[in-house]
Amino acid sequence: MRTIAQISDLHFGAHEPAVVAYLHAALSAIRPDLVVVSGDLTQRARKEQFAEAALFFDRLEAEGLRLLIVPGNHDVPMHKPFQRLFWPLRRYTRFIARGRSAWYCDTELAVLGLASAHGLTVKDGRLTQVQIRSIGASFAAAPESAARILVTHHPLVPLPGEEEGEVEPALRGAKSALKAVRAAGVHLVLAGHHHMPGVNLSGPTLSIDLGVMVVQAGTATSWRRRRAPNSFNLLRLVSPNEVQVEEWISEGGAFSSPGPCKSFARSAGGGWAATSS
Ligand SMILES: [Fe+2]
Ligand SMILES: [Fe+2]
Image 1 (spheres, rainbow, N blue to C red):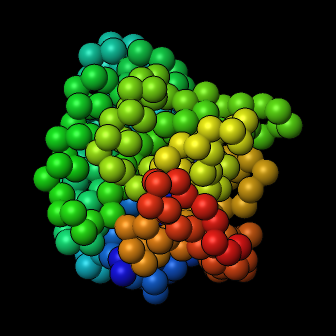
Image 2: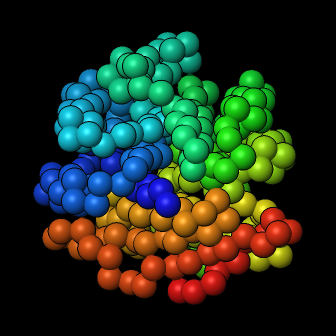
Protein backbone atom coordinates (compact mmCIF):
# COMPACT_ATOMS: atom_id res chain seq x y z
CA MET A 1 0.00 0.00 0.00
CA ARG A 2 1.21 3.49 -0.79
CA THR A 3 0.10 6.74 0.84
CA ILE A 4 -0.04 10.12 -0.84
CA ALA A 5 -0.63 13.47 0.85
CA GLN A 6 -2.10 15.88 -1.69
CA ILE A 7 -1.53 19.47 -0.65
CA SER A 8 -2.57 22.35 -2.88
CA ASP A 9 -2.99 26.08 -3.24
CA LEU A 10 -0.61 27.02 -0.45
CA HIS A 11 -0.49 30.62 -1.75
CA PHE A 12 2.61 31.81 0.11
CA GLY A 13 2.09 35.56 0.41
CA ALA A 14 -1.57 35.01 1.29
CA HIS A 15 -0.93 32.22 3.76
CA GLU A 16 -1.61 31.69 7.44
CA PRO A 17 1.84 31.17 9.03
CA ALA A 18 0.41 29.11 11.88
CA VAL A 19 -1.40 26.81 9.44
CA VAL A 20 1.86 26.32 7.49
CA ALA A 21 3.44 25.11 10.75
CA TYR A 22 0.46 22.82 11.40
CA LEU A 23 0.75 21.41 7.89
CA HIS A 24 4.46 20.75 8.36
CA ALA A 25 3.74 18.98 11.65
CA ALA A 26 0.98 16.85 10.10
CA LEU A 27 3.13 15.74 7.16
CA SER A 28 6.09 15.01 9.46
CA ALA A 29 3.85 12.80 11.60
CA ILE A 30 2.03 11.02 8.75
CA ARG A 31 5.17 10.50 6.65
CA PRO A 32 3.35 9.65 3.38
CA ASP A 33 5.25 7.84 0.62
CA LEU A 34 4.76 10.90 -1.59
CA VAL A 35 3.64 14.51 -1.05
CA VAL A 36 1.91 15.78 -4.19
CA VAL A 37 1.68 19.57 -4.45
CA SER A 38 -0.97 20.53 -7.01
CA GLY A 39 -0.04 24.15 -7.72
CA ASP A 40 -0.56 27.76 -6.64
CA LEU A 41 2.45 27.74 -4.36
CA THR A 42 2.49 31.54 -4.27
CA GLN A 43 -0.03 34.36 -4.33
CA ARG A 44 1.65 36.66 -6.87
CA ALA A 45 4.72 34.74 -8.12
CA ARG A 46 7.01 37.15 -6.25
CA LYS A 47 10.56 36.13 -5.46
CA GLU A 48 10.08 36.27 -1.71
CA GLN A 49 6.92 34.19 -1.97
CA PHE A 50 8.72 31.51 -3.99
CA ALA A 51 11.60 31.64 -1.49
CA GLU A 52 9.17 30.94 1.37
CA ALA A 53 7.58 28.07 -0.55
CA ALA A 54 11.02 26.66 -1.40
CA LEU A 55 12.05 26.76 2.24
CA PHE A 56 8.91 24.88 3.24
CA PHE A 57 9.56 22.16 0.64
CA ASP A 58 13.28 21.96 1.43
CA ARG A 59 12.48 21.33 5.09
CA LEU A 60 10.11 18.49 4.22
CA GLU A 61 12.72 16.94 1.94
CA ALA A 62 15.38 17.34 4.63
CA GLU A 63 13.16 15.11 6.78
CA GLY A 64 13.25 12.46 4.07
CA LEU A 65 9.84 13.16 2.51
CA ARG A 66 9.52 12.84 -1.25
CA LEU A 67 7.75 15.66 -3.16
CA LEU A 68 6.19 15.95 -6.60
CA ILE A 69 5.20 19.52 -7.46
CA VAL A 70 3.36 21.26 -10.31
CA PRO A 71 2.83 25.02 -10.72
CA GLY A 72 -0.50 26.85 -10.73
CA ASN A 73 -1.76 30.02 -12.41
CA HIS A 74 -0.70 32.11 -9.40
CA ASP A 75 2.90 30.97 -9.99
CA VAL A 76 2.97 32.91 -13.28
CA PRO A 77 3.73 36.64 -12.80
CA MET A 78 0.57 38.55 -13.65
CA HIS A 79 2.04 42.07 -13.83
CA LYS A 80 5.11 41.34 -15.95
CA PRO A 81 3.66 40.91 -19.47
CA PHE A 82 6.97 40.16 -21.20
CA GLN A 83 7.96 37.49 -18.71
CA ARG A 84 4.41 36.20 -18.57
CA LEU A 85 4.32 35.63 -22.34
CA PHE A 86 7.83 34.40 -23.02
CA TRP A 87 8.99 32.68 -19.83
CA PRO A 88 5.97 32.33 -17.56
CA LEU A 89 7.50 29.69 -15.31
CA ARG A 90 10.96 31.25 -14.97
CA ARG A 91 10.71 31.92 -11.25
CA TYR A 92 8.95 28.63 -10.61
CA THR A 93 11.78 26.85 -12.43
CA ARG A 94 14.48 28.78 -10.59
CA PHE A 95 13.08 28.46 -7.07
CA ILE A 96 11.04 25.27 -7.11
CA ALA A 97 11.55 22.91 -10.05
CA ARG A 98 15.37 22.94 -9.92
CA GLY A 99 16.42 19.26 -10.00
CA ARG A 100 12.99 18.06 -8.88
CA SER A 101 11.21 15.61 -11.16
CA ALA A 102 7.53 15.72 -12.03
CA TRP A 103 7.57 11.94 -12.58
CA TYR A 104 7.68 9.31 -9.85
CA CYS A 105 7.53 5.59 -10.46
CA ASP A 106 7.92 2.42 -8.39
CA THR A 107 6.23 -1.00 -8.51
CA GLU A 108 3.03 0.30 -6.84
CA LEU A 109 2.84 3.90 -7.93
CA ALA A 110 3.40 5.94 -11.10
CA VAL A 111 2.70 9.66 -10.82
CA LEU A 112 3.05 12.24 -13.58
CA GLY A 113 2.79 15.99 -12.95
CA LEU A 114 1.98 18.35 -15.82
CA ALA A 115 2.08 22.15 -15.71
CA SER A 116 -1.33 23.45 -16.76
CA ALA A 117 -0.46 27.08 -15.91
CA HIS A 118 0.72 29.21 -18.82
CA GLY A 119 1.23 32.84 -19.75
CA LEU A 120 -1.63 33.59 -22.10
CA THR A 121 -4.56 33.85 -19.75
CA VAL A 122 -4.94 35.12 -16.23
CA LYS A 123 -6.70 32.23 -14.57
CA ASP A 124 -7.45 29.38 -16.94
CA GLY A 125 -5.26 26.39 -17.58
CA ARG A 126 -4.43 24.30 -20.59
CA LEU A 127 -2.46 21.27 -21.65
CA THR A 128 -0.60 21.37 -24.95
CA GLN A 129 -0.67 18.54 -27.48
CA VAL A 130 2.94 17.72 -26.53
CA GLN A 131 1.94 17.41 -22.88
CA ILE A 132 -1.10 15.31 -23.76
CA ARG A 133 1.08 12.94 -25.80
CA SER A 134 3.45 12.64 -22.86
CA ILE A 135 0.64 11.07 -20.78
CA GLY A 136 0.62 7.87 -22.85
CA ALA A 137 4.39 7.81 -23.30
CA SER A 138 5.09 8.24 -19.58
CA PHE A 139 2.64 5.69 -18.23
CA ALA A 140 3.67 3.14 -20.88
CA ALA A 141 6.98 2.97 -19.00
CA ALA A 142 5.29 2.16 -15.65
CA PRO A 143 4.90 -1.40 -14.40
CA GLU A 144 1.50 -3.04 -14.85
CA SER A 145 1.16 -3.32 -11.05
CA ALA A 146 1.41 0.45 -10.45
CA ALA A 147 -1.50 2.78 -9.74
CA ARG A 148 -1.36 5.49 -12.38
CA ILE A 149 -1.96 9.06 -11.24
CA LEU A 150 -1.94 12.32 -13.19
CA VAL A 151 -1.49 15.64 -11.36
CA THR A 152 -2.38 19.05 -12.77
CA HIS A 153 -3.29 22.32 -11.09
CA HIS A 154 -6.40 22.99 -13.19
CA PRO A 155 -8.95 20.16 -13.15
CA LEU A 156 -9.40 17.97 -16.22
CA VAL A 157 -13.17 17.97 -15.86
CA PRO A 158 -15.79 20.65 -15.28
CA LEU A 159 -16.75 20.58 -11.62
CA PRO A 160 -19.66 21.84 -9.56
CA GLY A 161 -18.96 25.42 -8.45
CA GLU A 162 -19.49 27.18 -5.16
CA GLU A 163 -23.00 28.40 -5.97
CA GLU A 164 -25.99 26.19 -6.68
CA GLY A 165 -25.95 25.18 -10.37
CA GLU A 166 -22.60 26.84 -11.03
CA VAL A 167 -20.09 24.84 -13.07
CA GLU A 168 -16.35 25.54 -13.03
CA PRO A 169 -14.85 24.91 -16.48
CA ALA A 170 -12.17 22.31 -17.17
CA LEU A 171 -8.75 23.26 -18.51
CA ARG A 172 -8.30 23.83 -22.24
CA GLY A 173 -7.42 20.60 -24.03
CA ALA A 174 -9.39 18.61 -21.45
CA LYS A 175 -11.26 16.54 -24.02
CA SER A 176 -8.17 15.10 -25.65
CA ALA A 177 -6.37 14.93 -22.31
CA LEU A 178 -9.18 12.79 -20.87
CA LYS A 179 -8.99 10.55 -23.92
CA ALA A 180 -5.25 10.12 -23.32
CA VAL A 181 -5.86 9.53 -19.61
CA ARG A 182 -8.30 6.72 -20.32
CA ALA A 183 -6.08 5.19 -23.01
CA ALA A 184 -3.11 5.22 -20.62
CA GLY A 185 -5.14 3.41 -17.93
CA VAL A 186 -4.83 6.29 -15.47
CA HIS A 187 -6.68 5.54 -12.24
CA LEU A 188 -6.77 8.93 -10.52
CA VAL A 189 -6.40 12.56 -11.51
CA LEU A 190 -5.50 15.03 -8.79
CA ALA A 191 -5.94 18.80 -9.03
CA GLY A 192 -6.57 21.95 -7.02
CA HIS A 193 -7.32 25.51 -8.18
CA HIS A 194 -10.94 25.88 -7.02
CA HIS A 195 -10.15 25.68 -3.29
CA MET A 196 -13.03 23.25 -2.98
CA PRO A 197 -12.04 19.75 -1.84
CA GLY A 198 -13.92 16.67 -2.98
CA VAL A 199 -13.99 13.44 -4.93
CA ASN A 200 -15.84 13.30 -8.24
CA LEU A 201 -16.62 10.08 -10.04
CA SER A 202 -18.89 11.58 -12.68
CA GLY A 203 -19.41 14.88 -14.47
CA PRO A 204 -21.41 17.75 -12.96
CA THR A 205 -24.60 16.48 -14.50
CA LEU A 206 -23.99 13.16 -12.69
CA SER A 207 -24.67 11.37 -15.96
CA ILE A 208 -21.18 11.12 -17.40
CA ASP A 209 -19.03 8.29 -16.10
CA LEU A 210 -15.56 9.80 -16.22
CA GLY A 211 -13.86 6.40 -16.02
CA VAL A 212 -11.34 8.00 -13.74
CA MET A 213 -11.50 9.23 -10.18
CA VAL A 214 -11.06 12.99 -9.78
CA VAL A 215 -9.67 14.09 -6.43
CA GLN A 216 -9.73 17.82 -5.71
CA ALA A 217 -7.80 19.41 -2.88
CA GLY A 218 -8.79 22.57 -1.03
CA THR A 219 -6.32 25.26 -0.04
CA ALA A 220 -3.90 23.86 2.52
CA THR A 221 -2.60 27.08 4.04
CA SER A 222 -4.19 30.17 2.49
CA TRP A 223 -6.71 32.51 4.02
CA ARG A 224 -8.26 32.66 0.53
CA ARG A 225 -10.70 29.93 1.51
CA ARG A 226 -14.08 29.49 -0.07
CA ARG A 227 -16.72 27.64 1.90
CA ALA A 228 -14.24 25.04 3.08
CA PRO A 229 -11.62 25.21 5.86
CA ASN A 230 -7.90 24.72 5.15
CA SER A 231 -7.41 21.10 4.18
CA PHE A 232 -5.36 18.47 2.44
CA ASN A 233 -6.14 14.96 1.21
CA LEU A 234 -4.54 11.76 2.43
CA LEU A 235 -4.91 8.97 -0.12
CA ARG A 236 -4.25 5.34 0.74
CA LEU A 237 -3.79 3.21 -2.35
CA VAL A 238 -4.76 -0.23 -1.13
CA SER A 239 -4.39 -1.39 -4.73
CA PRO A 240 -4.61 0.46 -8.07
CA ASN A 241 -8.36 -0.24 -8.03
CA GLU A 242 -9.05 0.46 -4.37
CA VAL A 243 -8.45 3.86 -2.80
CA GLN A 244 -9.27 5.45 0.54
CA VAL A 245 -9.49 9.22 0.78
CA GLU A 246 -9.29 11.08 4.05
CA GLU A 247 -9.70 14.85 4.28
CA TRP A 248 -7.53 16.48 6.93
CA ILE A 249 -8.70 19.92 8.01
CA SER A 250 -7.46 22.82 10.11
CA GLU A 251 -9.93 25.24 11.60
CA GLY A 252 -7.28 27.47 13.12
CA GLY A 253 -5.52 24.64 14.96
CA ALA A 254 -3.62 21.45 14.19
CA PHE A 255 -4.74 19.38 11.20
CA SER A 256 -6.94 16.41 12.00
CA SER A 257 -9.21 14.07 10.14
CA PRO A 258 -12.61 14.39 11.77
CA GLY A 259 -14.71 12.61 9.17
CA PRO A 260 -14.80 8.95 8.19
CA CYS A 261 -12.34 7.69 5.63
CA LYS A 262 -14.09 7.32 2.26
CA SER A 263 -13.39 4.17 0.26
CA PHE A 264 -13.68 3.78 -3.50
CA ALA A 265 -13.27 0.80 -5.81
CA ARG A 266 -12.98 0.46 -9.55
CA SER A 267 -14.94 -2.30 -11.27
CA ALA A 268 -13.60 -4.56 -14.01
CA GLY A 269 -15.49 -2.31 -16.44
CA GLY A 270 -13.36 0.66 -15.37
CA GLY A 271 -15.97 2.70 -13.46
CA TRP A 272 -15.31 3.95 -9.92
CA ALA A 273 -17.89 3.76 -7.13
CA ALA A 274 -17.94 4.63 -3.44
CA THR A 275 -17.87 1.53 -1.24
CA SER A 276 -18.22 3.36 2.07
CA SER A 277 -18.32 6.91 3.39
FE1 LIG B 1 -5.42 28.76 -5.75
FE1 LIG C 1 -5.28 28.37 -9.32
